[in-house]
Length: 291
Picture 1 (cartoon, helix red, strand yellow):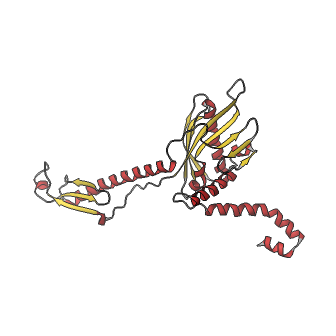
Picture 2 (picture 1 turned 120 degrees about the horizontal axis):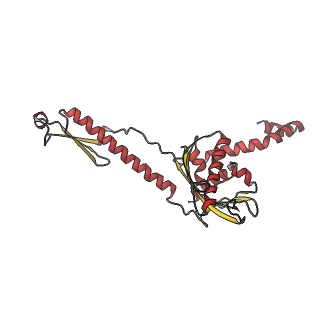
Picture 3 (picture 1 turned 60 degrees about the horizontal axis):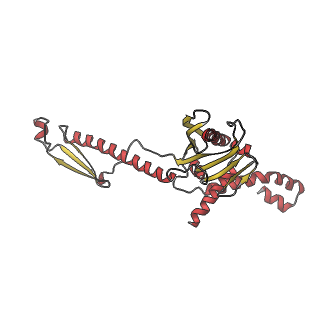
């Protein structure tokens, strides 16, 4: 509003002040625009990021450690909480793998296009002949799975049969209709309990078993969905990369999908990757619309 007023009034002082504020305003509007594009089913969830060293030996392990620092620095710049779950150190230097979580609204939607192979070209600090080395690391991004410890069961989805217990258990158990068989109609899971003396006790025990079976099934389905989202194992080698980081013979980071590039490699490796991420979100949304 102030910018429009300054333009309408044509006041030189106001226009000069507006010109100073314009870059920040442009960034804010762009950030809001990008946020509106995050409308995927899982976009609003936290992100779990797994890094793994690919081809390139010790340089690839070192590159994996560099990527971990880059993403943690990116989160730190924005004030996002992170939790490193696991790091597996390589024998000589760097990391074989690392897994961490970014905890903020829309972390998965923001980071999911980072999923892929990242390629580094540089003079190897581990080569005593100072030769150029190409190394690769895989980045896997999945949404944090919200697993409940309790499964709600709709009574309308149950068929409960009462029958007389069979087998050992004493006279009271065998002569009354106390055994319970519960069938969960949507899944076909059947649970039977006949060890207790009363029908109510058997039903309660059977419900506990059914709940455990349904929770296990839910976790298996979530694991399958996670596998679908990650697209399976990556080929972490030449020709499969989504972004190149070149430190020698020139300085350049370039994303091969969006063509966004910068020569400020130091800033990128220190977590300044917002331009890449924003372009990826726009690219992904355009690809989804086209598809």
